[in-house]
Image 1 (cartoon, rainbow over the protein chains, first blue to last red):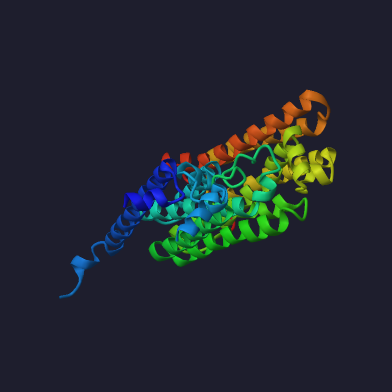
Image 2: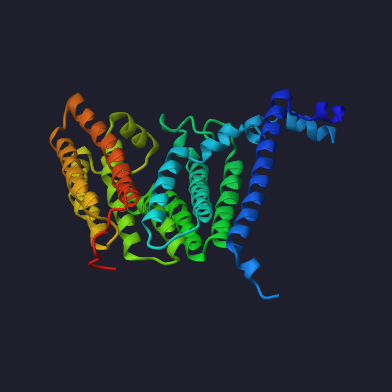
Length: 53
Length: 318
C-alpha cells in the first residue's frame, strides 16, 4: 500500500486534503441516512400504531 | 502504468483537480447568499397558513439551503472567466485554481439534483418543482443568458433570489397563494436598488467594466442608475404593503414598514441628489447597507408578529 502511495502524483498534503474530503463526504452520507430515517418515522406518525391488523 | 503516473506528476495540480479543501467547497455554496435564502424561506414557512411538523420544516429549509448553494456553485462554474477579471471575485475557489471548473460543475449538479429530490420525496412535489425552477432561473436565465447580455440582468434575474419564501410557503401549503406572491414581489422589487447601489461604487463599477458585464452604471451611466434606483424604491414601498392586503401581516408590520419605507426613500433620494466626490460614494454605501438591513427587518417583522401572536388583517385579496 505504501508503494502505491509513493507512486501516485499526490504528496502528503494532497492526501491529507483528500482524507478530509472523504471524511466530510462520509459524514454527509450518514447525515442523509439519518435524515431519511427520521423523516420516514415523522411522516408515518401514529399511522403505524393505528393500522388495522 | 508508470507512464501515466509520470504524466500526472508533470500535469499542474490545478488542471488535474483534487486540490480543493472542504473550506473551498463550502465557499462554492456562497454561504452569505445562502443565509439570506434560509432566512426568507423560513419566514415563508412561518407566514404560510397551516401547520407543518418542525422536523419537516427543518428538512425543507435544509433542501432549500442546499439548492441555493448548488445554484451558487454552478454560478461560480459558469462565471469563472469573468470572476478572474474582477478583484471582488478573483479569490473565489475556481478562478483561484483551488477547484477545477469540472469539479465545481459536478459538485453543483449533484447538490442541485439532490436538493430537489429530497424536497420532493420528503416534503412535497410543488415545493420541489419551485426549487428546481429557482435553480434553473438563476443559472440558465440569469447567469448564462441575461447577466452578460443586458443591463436589465438583475431586474429579471433577481426573481431567482425572490423565490425562496414561496418555496418555503409551498412546503407548508402545497400551493402557490397570493400571500407568497406578495413576499416574492418584495424581494423582486428590492433587488435592483440594492444591487445598483453596490454597482455604483467606484471599485465595483471598475470591476464590472473590466469584465465587460453590462451592469446599468457601466452601460447607461451613473446618473441614469441613480434615477432608476429612486424609481424602483418608490415602487418598492407600496409593494411592501401588499402582505397586509393578503392577510399575511398585521398592524405592527404595516406601521413599521411605512417608517422603514420612508427611510429607504430618503437614502435613495440622497444617492439621487449627491452625485460627485466622496459623499456620493458614501451615500451609495449607506443605501447598500441600509437596504440589506431593511430586507432583514421587513421579514423579521413577520416573525415577530407570529411570535407574539399578533392577528393579521382580514385579507382583501386571496
